[in-house]
Image (spheres, rainbow, N blue to C red):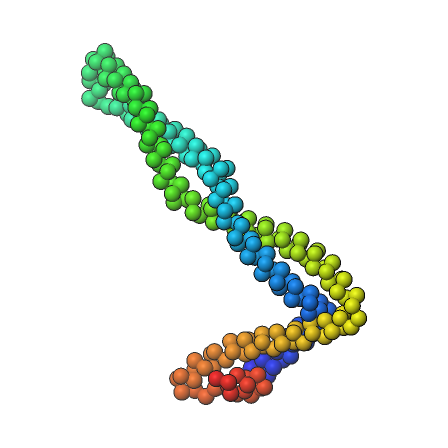
Length: 228
């Protein structure tokens, strides 16, 4: 492990410095700023859009479907209950006219209770959507955030590409930009190397609390140990 961190850090510095040189400091910085701007706009806009879309398009359809489904279940339960009652021994022991009179009363009561059934079904729909609405709105908001971010990123990239092309017409700007891009990329690669080295040192630091010695060696490991 002594020199693995060094090799990883060198590799990251070289690769990211090369990528920074190819992309350029201005382009890289503009890309980061564009991503931040796109994320901020998408975050702010996605919330009201998600609420508006849910309240006007999704909620009414879901509410109607749940009420319809609940009413069907209620009616099926009443029908099944009447049928079960009609098959019981006590009912069958009655005279046919009395039996039919009782069942007719039950059916008429069920039919007269349409308003009550509607209220029950509406209550079920309201309770279900009280639980589901935040989850659905969050899902819609995430989808809108991604879509808005992608669209803004494309638009910003096109605009910045045109601006950078004009800036590169200024003498020595292109060369300086690529040099700064390489330097910034190398710095980022070194920072990544420090983070990776710290992660690699965690097991050794934990074992050090048990009285074991920390394994040293390698530039990055020794550097981190001196800092901490």
